Length: 360
Image 1: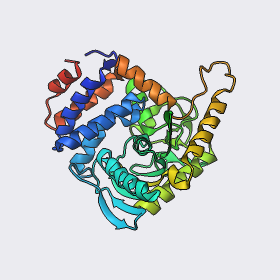
Image 2: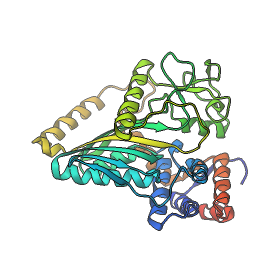
Image 3: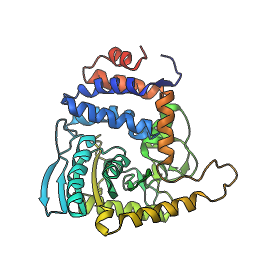
């Protein structure tokens, strides 16, 4: 296959990833759901949360930290307040099921708070905001990460918590929804894995090495001795990360990260989600009119040199999705080799996976 980056058509990539996921023993619906979510992350440009996660999932499964064919469990039901247990099931399944329960309640009552714990890696959190937006609901999501600490606190020299994503979605009639989705670290951990696999440095101001010194070498988040990512925006991003741990972790999941790395490969997420039906507030049309007027006003700003447009959250992902659906999904050779090795571990023939992707 050589060292050239592969461009794989999305439908062929979906087929190849489905074959790998079947190796977990997943039921057909789980196979489709997990594969579609991972490929969609790559389509939107979030390669850090896409198919490159499969080797990590295989490691977690072998250790018993990922439980295929598992569904969300209702622990407490207070009507518009739900507490759910993901039972370490595939986050792509658990996240969709959790949001479906919240959407049903929010449509009926006007709002719902969903406290989800113990879900294996929920992937791109924007997918859950999009699911809510497709149902006409505003949503806000605070997420914590139980795994090896990877982000340093503001002023700290080593890692003490995860990348703790924050996400919000706002549906608006007549235009695509606003989907704000970001890690509270300067860059997502998976982006350092992608950079490492490509043999590229990361931008300055993102990383510390194992001595707490600034570095652009991504290896410090991929292999020991471990360094740390930095929070975005200094103390502000750190404060939001702290809030995600307290709300997504302590409150929603009943579990925070406060232990040293024990070497396990599983990634568990807690997520506190707030879902709101704008119509329940009395005047959905006025809300949308004001929201669209504001967005139009913002996007009419004169462009600064070097910028092609004033975008709002979600625009970049939609543009990337369209481009990658047209031209193919880029996959670097190292990531693809790791996926084939993971397939072999699952007793899935790597040559068949290659053929599915058109890379035989």
